[in-house]
Amino acid sequence: MANTQDDARTFQRVAPAQSVADRVVSEVEAMIKAEELSPGHRIGTRQELCEQFGVAPATLGEALRVLRARGSVDLRPGPGGGIFVADQSPLIRLAHSVLRLRQTGAPVHDVVKVLDALDEAVMGDAVVHRTDADIADLDALMAEIADHWHDPVEGLHGNWRLHRRIAEISPNAVLRTFYLNLVDYIEGETSGSTDDADLSVPGFRPDTDERLHIHTALVEAIRSGDVEAGRKAVLDHRTLGR
Image (cartoon, rainbow, N blue to C red; front, side, top):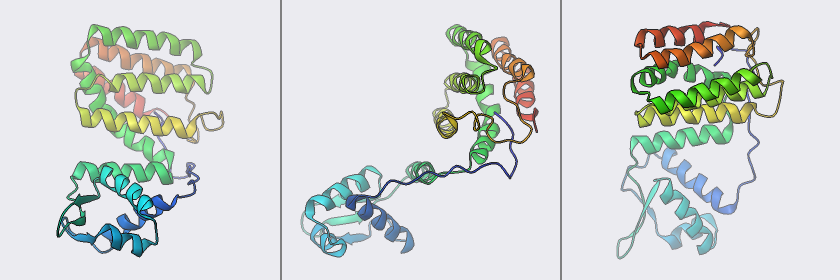
């Protein structure tokens, strides 16, 4: 990963046109947030919401399926039933926040900064928990990466494949999930363009021999099982190009 500066490019997604059901979902979630509705608050009945949003029952049903899947609302049948604000867990709220970032776009350099901050934890787990099969996979990846390192696009994609495989070693599901999603976001936003392959970091070259050596050192540190060697490899990886 490269270290970044504040003038790096911001990638913005072009939001697709919302369907009517999507609009209802957005308005219900906005209402819950704006009015700070507590879990268990009764939003209304299906009929009342159809009238409020001016939609057909089938459209409201589609919106409610999405809202339930997101953990935003609960549906209760029978007398006194209806649509209620759900009691979301912190993890669900966090997942929705990340989803909104993916939908609206986020500065790639901000995502890279977070990824860099997670590198030491990811490497620490890899050093401690790696297996012979993990080492074999990493060696194969490094051999492939070395063949394409100086290609501005393929070399960078190889870099992400390596970091993704290192993260997969971690037994920490939260760390692993966040790291892999951040890698997916960065690679998705920078794919298909040689202009974007350097992550828009002034003065940074991802395809130098020194960068290749640093990535080789990451794998060697994991192979060694030496936690201090892992920390040094991460520091070298993070600080080059700063």
